[in-house]
Structure formats: C-alpha cells, structure tokens
Image (cartoon, rainbow, N blue to C red; front, side, top):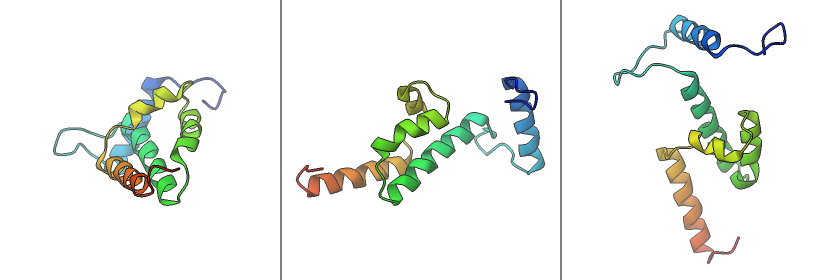
Length: 106
C-alpha cells in the first residue's frame, strides 16, 4: 500500500527493489540470475517453514497462515513458492522417517 493508501504498481515496486539491491551490492549470480521480488518471497516462505519445523511446530497447521501473509486467497497458490529445495526435501525425509519409525501413528 502506498503512502496515499493506493496499491503500488508492480513496475514501481520492482524498480525500487532493484535499485535497493544494486545499492546493497547484490548483483547477478554466475548463472545470470539477479535478485527478484519472487525470489525474495520464495526465500521467505522456505525459511518460515524451516523455522517452524526446527521449532517442532506443525507446518500443516501453519501453512494457511503463510498463505494469508503472502496474500494468497487459496493455499494451493502458496505451493508455487515451495518448490523442492534441498532443505525442504531433507525436512520431508526426516518427517517421513520419524513417521515410519513410529509405525505411522501421528
């Protein structure tokens, strides 16, 4: 939301983000990909899930809160941010191992 209470145009937000990233010294990586708002949101979502898991909190119960925070009407829209990263795959594997070790009882 702008200072006037209006929505902020994506182009203006993107340009401001890129200027701030350049000023902070964040540049394109060796793969040619630079900082982006989408990457920032993706990293936030992944990190939030990692913290919940390390705190022993229920990701399944908290995922709708993450969806609302990201501004998604449906939790299914949040899943696009939760691609199979090594950290998430490790978390899923650890959770399945614990589940299987306990005989499948929740």
